[in-house]
Every structure is written in structure tokens, then in C-alpha cells.
Length: 322
Image (cartoon, rainbow, N blue to C red; front, side, top):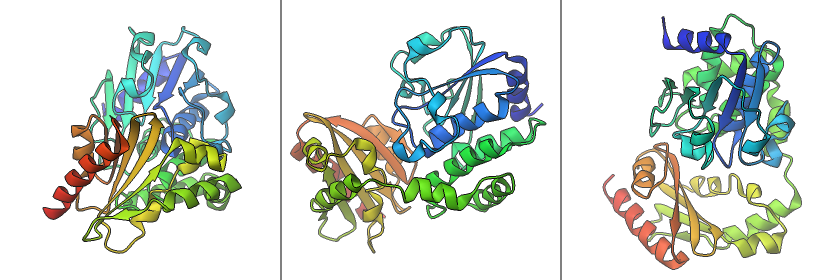
């Protein structure tokens, strides 16, 4: 029996399922979780959990309003836990491991840093997204995917491939997307919701952030900074900064782009994007974070100047080796 068959069998046996994904969710996390909900909702009692609310550009996804954001809101009678797009359980919630103690756990993910924390671990770092893995899983369930499931999975794959632009985009990504369109996903409506429905505050925030743009001497590394004061000045929320780092990767010659985002005083989330030659996942792991070879991040404590100096030196050293 294949791993996919074993997972589908466990889901079939379960009556009450809890589906969870990582904090600060993006399209792959939310889309993958909701896809499982829509595929099994008529036969199972399913709860979907994410500690944080879905960003405004993902609220169009069917079922987004049903996601629970506090552990105390969940019924504790579930007999199976499915964790998606999450390298380790601590990324779901600080107290999540204790909350699900004693339950069967299925782990579905595409991060190369995944710790294989599940009873069954369907993990493929070669997949473009967790959504791509779940599509193959659900195809083997014996049930036809409905349009709601297709919409959620198309969104997951589209966002994690940067609208099929990133290096993780493969033949299978396009093949899967084609099948999802046949099943009811509407690319134009999804693109409109995700990429063309931003509030004015986002552009006001972007103007401030791009003003901080700095390059290395050889112009192979670029970075921008986002502070709490910028949010206040633009009357913007953190989710509005989604995709800002991509402006740097659009610059000819850039090998690594960096976003320094202030979380609180003397704490910064550092996000990395590589054009392919530098493995930024390894760097993020060394800093206590994680992610993919081309996209990763870590949270660091200290002054902005100290953090910038440390990160710039490490990134520049990596670039020199390519």
C-alpha cells in the first residue's frame, strides 16, 4: 500500500478531523487546509485551525470564514490531525503539540526542513507547493474534486510559484493547474482577488519601503526595510507587505534579496529570496529559521544596524562563492 493510500485510509476511518497550518499563513497554507475541508466536509466533521487570520487577499477562498483562530474554540473530540505546509509543529502554535497530544498526526508538506513529526509523513521537497501534493493525494481518494477544492488548490499552487514564475515551477505544476481549471477553478477571478484587490494603504506603505532600498557594491544583493512606524504612517497592516520583496528580485543581476521587517522593538523578521544559485534555506536554518532553497526566513533579536551588518556580510560571502 502506498503512502497516499495509507493516508486516505486513515482519513476514511476518522470521523472527526482537525486540519491545521502554520502561523502567518499565505496561499499555500490556507488553500491546502481549506481544500481538505471541502473535499471531505460532506462525510466528516472537520475543523480548520490557524492561529492567525487569513490575509485580506485570501478571504475570497470558500470556507475562509470558518477557520478557527484560538485553540479554546476547537472541539477536542477529533480523532485525527492533519497538519499542512508546516515544517514542524511549533510553527502551528506554541501550545499546539500539547493540545493534540495522543492523537494520530498526518504531516503533508514540501519544505526540505520538515522534521517528519507525523505518524505518516507525505513530504516532498521537489513539489512546488503543498497544494500540489494534496491534489495528487485527493485524486487517489476515489472522490471527484469539487470546484471549491479546485479553487483552493489552484490558489495554493499559483501563489507558491509566484504565478508560475519561480524556479520551483515544474511541468507538473502546469499540468495540475490545468486539471484544476477543468474542475472549476477560475484563474482570472483568483488572480483578481489575490493580486488586484489591494487597498490604497498598500501603495503608501510600498513607497516608504522602496525608499530604504540599498545594494551591495557589486549590486548582487539588495535589501529593503519595513518598520512599525511605516505601518502607522500609511495606516496599513502587516499583511499588506506581502510580495514587497519581489520588487527586488525583478532587478537584473540580483542574486539575493532581503527584507528586514520589524516585528517589535529590537526584533526583526528577515526574509530571503534567492534567484537560484544561493541556498538561502541553509542560511535561515543557521539563524534559527527555515524555508526553501530560494525562499526562507528567520527572526532575529537586536538593533536593526547590528542585524543588517550581520546578514549582509553572510549573504555577500555566500554570493562570492557562486
